[in-house]
Image (cartoon, rainbow, N blue to C red):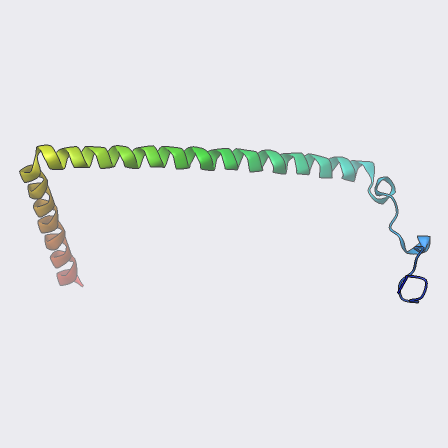
Length: 103
């Protein structure tokens, strides 16, 4: 079936139903403002993409450093590590007990 046989499909478009050209559609000041907003949006997108990549890289390197230091501490001073964990658990337990008694 071709467009000529179907009355709903027009082979030639009606010019009265088409949108006007873009230069006639927007005032020059509006077009300039839209262009400026579009450029600022693109710059902001690039800025935040770069910031996201930087934060990801720095967090990965920070976690790798923490992991390396904790493994070195575990291998060199295991008793000090256990003492630190026990002291922290004791302090948290005392703080929780005081908090619950005041409520």
